[in-house]
Image (cartoon, rainbow over all chains, first blue to last red; front, side):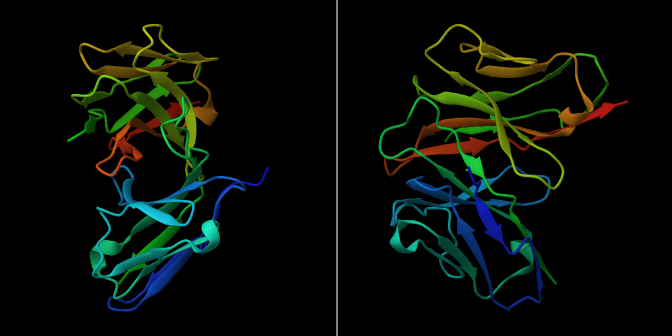
Length: 118
Length: 117
């Protein structure tokens, strides 16, 4: 079974430029997450989709970050304009959970996209 | 707010020894799940072990086991017979209901574990 795919793996941009990250979750997984992992910290949830609807974007800096999940499958996360503090690894994860918590709650993560803002 | 605390930023242990990673959490909920995730260098995060709060029995997965103390809100991970492949960042995570009726994970800051040959 193919895992969660993310691209690009690495991206270096100047501040105020824009960047987009792509994620393809595991086939059949209804829930998709974007996490931001700053060096030395644990992952922080940015946005959670269930199918193609947003469930939770309470920690997404909406003045510069946007995300969409078309047709309930692939997702893109965009940052425009980027700031120095956006340097982080952006993790995409998916899970089978669709509704109340399952007895696993297990998330499957991609390898992440490392962003460096200069 | 839910918080997860991992007080050991780094640990190292000789191969084949046993090591215990600590985790505490804060919640007012009664039903929740706890997880340990492993993030090897430059590789994706994977689930190591999970524990349902309503179960008194500690979870075990081969060389990995937990010591779940619900009253103390403590959830430590024990790795027995440690192997070089266990070298990774280990994150403790707590699953709970979000404000929007969604299940979400809150992660700790991680413990970097190095297994020494």
